[in-house]
Length: 466
Ligand SMILES: Cc1cc2nc3c(=O)[nH]c(=O)nc-3n(C[C@H](O)[C@H](O)[C@H](O)COP(=O)(O)OP(=O)(O)OC[C@H]3O[C@@H](n4cnc5c(N)ncnc54)[C@H](O)[C@@H]3O)c2cc1C
Image (tube, rainbow, N blue to C red):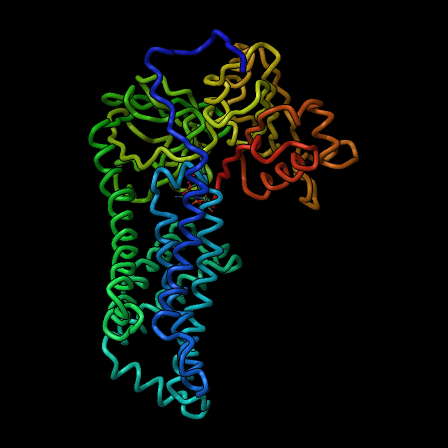
């Protein structure tokens, strides 16, 4: 890697985030081990005995689906508890994707569990299903709570199906999504009071309590306590708000001990500006300037109520932060040459990266896809930063293609996206490529990068919506 000279405010720059590639393998191994453990508990609890009776066999299968579903649900909670090692190993994109997949898988298994257990209790007779369901719900301890929990989870899953979700405001969807925690916790009593597998052996009881407490504790520690501690320690306040034109405002923040805040260019925080009612809604914004130990800056494009409010922030406004998050930072770099590809306001973290990456003249290339409607966010600042690093900036202006199957604008010469990429960046396969923008556009860029021969581990991405 280049040993280049320019490192802004080097003495004050905060320490880089820690990242060890083996964390990811360890986390994946733990997931598989936990699944093996629950299957082993089911077997040890007589899962395969007495299967000559159809009702008993169906009940046993119902127990297995319950164990796997409960395990996956708790893993899901752990995945999004913002545990730093997990976050840094997988990145938000992958975590959100896995959370979604695990969510649908655990929900399907939970529905199967309900159906199988009731059918098993009914001796495999469909005509007995309804009376048995009523009896189970009313007579077994903790079961009414479990029914309420199931109702919460059904609501969360229905509102997370893509079409329903698209019809909801983000805030409404997010608020409804929080009922998943309630659903998972309402299911606990019936597991404790009626779940034979939960209490089958001291090892099984210890396992389930460990996973439950780890999930609840992680949420409490990393999503509530640590953000509050961090916000208190750094006492962040708005210093100034600059109008950058094109509906973009840059908020500059000051605080205490910022040199000790372990954050890197390209990362983001969830921000809560304490400027009045509505402050509880956090918004993720990436740093748009390399952290220098004295100030932080975010550049925000107004797209809705929350982002538009940024323009009216007053100096002195207190700010709560959660983070830092994200794997799109200089620490993940592998090659000497770098390409940054952004769409619209996705250029904000790229500006911070341009300032922070150590590159020799000619090693940095920036492609910025801009629509006609969105203007040229942060253009002057980005152009100046690229010039200062001896890099090359190429704008890709114009409206989207009608078929929306290309990351390039209308009017771009025919040929595949990968060909265009090779034309724009002939040595793209030898570069680390940082990509940032809206999800659908980003997926098209990542596909083109793969086709152009860029290895997966050289592609670092941040989606501006989940
Ligand atoms: C990791 C990440 C980094 C981002 N960095 C920047 C940045 O540096 N500059 C910038 O201008 N924008 C950034 N965004 C986008 C920004 O968070 C949204 O534009 C903003 O939250 C919109 O809120 P709103 O109330 O104005 O609009 P709304 O109309 O409420 O939301 C518009 C869309 O923004 C997304 N969104 C809204 N709130 C959230 C939330 N709390 N979490 C995740 N997505 C949300 C949803 O997809 C929603 O459909 C980033 C997004 C993500 C996920």
